[in-house]
Each structure stands twice: as structure tokens, then as C-alpha cells.
Length: 277
Image (tube, rainbow, N blue to C red; front, side, top):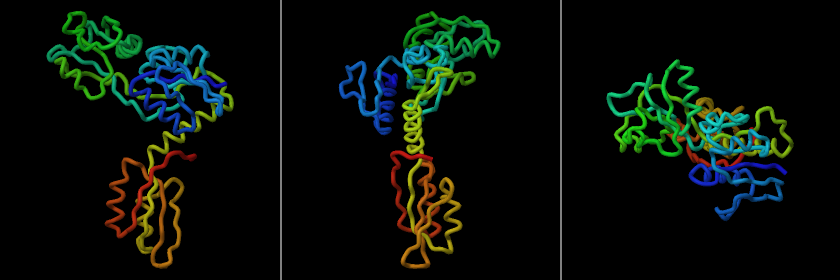
């Protein structure tokens, strides 16, 4: 049976379980359950602290896991990133009070000591790390640090603490799928990775259908090239054709505007729930 680790709580947990559901895997209905077996797919899910998942996967006790890239790198576990899941994105940055934005010789509070230590080593910066478990925004005010290093989503928490972001980005993080480094995948693992990949890709695209005059078809196809090429079907009116193509979700409204200006009509956009490309 394939053993898979998922985050046990928080926004990352909800997003990860939703991807698994869309990929065809059953998930727990009671948030208090620590594990759940999907008998039809022969998979057992374990709901763990995101920070611990890389350790379990790296040890070989669990086959696959979902965690943050920052947590994987900080764990220094024998686990490797398989794919990014395009959820839970954040940036890891330094922050300090205005006028004190220097790293060299400073005390840096962080919940990710290994990650920060490696970054500082690569930059030849000499600083003292202050490892903390959890929120670090108050470390400067409480006098235990001069600088903090933490994951930043919106930056609002830092602003409320009177801190400003400075320096280079330490890391761009997001939720990732991981496996033990050097692991030999069995059929169940390959199937899960392929299914999850299909959901991640499908979320990035939509399906666009529209009608356009043949005289404008070449320009329309430049706007919607699809993957290999768009699908073109004849209509009863032989001056027009129907076109179908996959379009990047982030670009779709701009593409629709341009198609309309070109004279395309009946423009429809449909979500894609899964695909194999």
C-alpha cells in the first residue's frame, strides 16, 4: 500500500487535500483523523505537521508527501522535490526596524535555522542565529534579535510589528510534492504523481471555444495556439469555423478581448478539472 503524508491543518492542508480529491483519491471527512485509507486506490494517508513530513518521507517510512519547499530545505532530510503544486506561495525574507537593516554581525531570529544558515554561508555573511519555534516578529522588540528571517505572504504582520523587509530574497517557496531521494517508484507512486501533475496543469489552463470567420482564422490561431495546435471544426455557414484551444488561465481575459476585437463570437470559457498532456 502506498503511504502518503499530507499537512494536518491550515490552508496548506485544505489545498493539498483538494488536489488529491480532484486527482481521484478519497480523503478523510473528520479533521481529527490522523490517518485514512483509500481502499480503491490502495493508498494510506497520514496527516502530519508540515514541518515533520520531509523527515518521515526522507526516512523511507512514507513514500510521498506534500510540504513547503522552505520546510524541505530547512529539514535537510533525504527527500527531494518532485513537482511544485502552484499553491501556498510565499517569499522568505529578512526584516528589521528602519535604520538597522544590516546582516553582518547581527543576531537573526528564525524558525528556519538551517535554511538561513546555508543562505548566509553562501553569501559569506557572519551572523548569529537565534532559533525560535513559531512566530518571530516579536523577537526584535523583546531584545533577543536584531533581524528576523521569515516567510512573507502579504507583509502585513511585519508592518504591524514596525519592521521593514530588506536584502535579497532568501527563497521563493510553495507547496511541493516530495519523495525520498533516490527512491524507486512503484506503479502506485507513478500513478499518483501523474494524476497530481494533471490536476496542477489543468488548474493553470482553461478551454476556450469560439466561432470566427475563416478570413480571420490565422490571426485567431496566433492568439490561441493551444498546445500542439487548436482544434478547428466546420460550421454550417462555410464562411465561419469553430475553434477550441487550451489557454493559460491568467491570460484568458486578455485573449478574449483580442478575439472579440478580431470578430470572434460565441466565446466560451470552460474549466479543466484534469488532463494528460
